[in-house]
Image 1: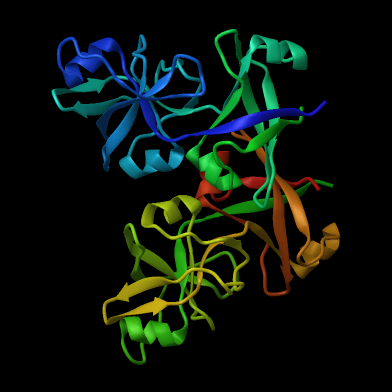
Image 2: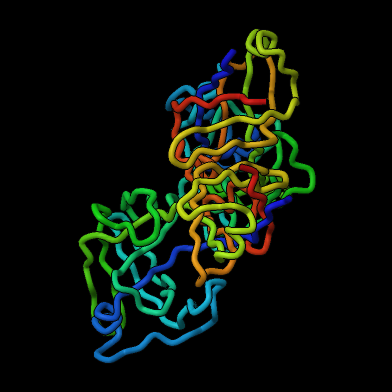
Length: 190
Length: 190
């Protein structure tokens, strides 16, 4: 059985806590939805912030909503070199010991002590997909992206939940290295 | 037998014809060596040029010497998006039908009609390495880069010559996607 998964390429983005949304955009501010993402309930917001590293900044980093418990900036390794920050590869939410960054919005700025990561590539599985393919939460998979720059990615983290929709998330370095784009199909090979 | 190859990460760079060296730096100008590269006789020059795309420019692109028969700019896919040019993945020297670009130096500027590529990942083999491992010129190999972001790259082009030293060349997108750096070891797996 071919285990095929659609690819979603994640550009640099940020998740904000509601506390930080209000510090950056004003008291009581709520993120507004620009468009839905592949995962149910998640959205790209109309709002952006500036993030400022030691060597440069990105003036318009998209905020993904809704607000989360902790603020987290996800950038590629290329981005990291570009602005001068040295984040580890981490799963989303696992930010202990990661570098901080300064975030600027129209109503204020915030400097977080930790929260910058290079996101570990991963696949969201709905529980039913995982059961069908006998894949466990946190399992490390090998996944092939085909084409001229074809490659087999190792250590692709399986994330299983009844709240997820089947989608493989890679960052722009991985997408560019593989010549892949959102909507391409990847194959779980092991 | 393990077929291990050192990795060299190629940042964006340009090769210039002697005609273009002189247009950009002045009549009779000769590139000067800053440091030798892994391939015998090749060097990073002290000189840089600006390359200008439709959406942006890179102010200091390193020239690799010596001068070649044709001018060729090698950039990553990330670079390509950044400055607004859409080059194909090509082997060095195969520039027919590729996009052009404007190049600026201290003494003038040149607009080439073609010559911008994303370099196809490749391994330089000395003839003796290729014979020992039974690898033919132009053969497409699968090569594994290990570690946290481990991956197996397909379609790695073998280039065999008595003038070459054993070295695998990948670009910054590939290096960043794999968490690899110059001096790491890769393994030919097929």
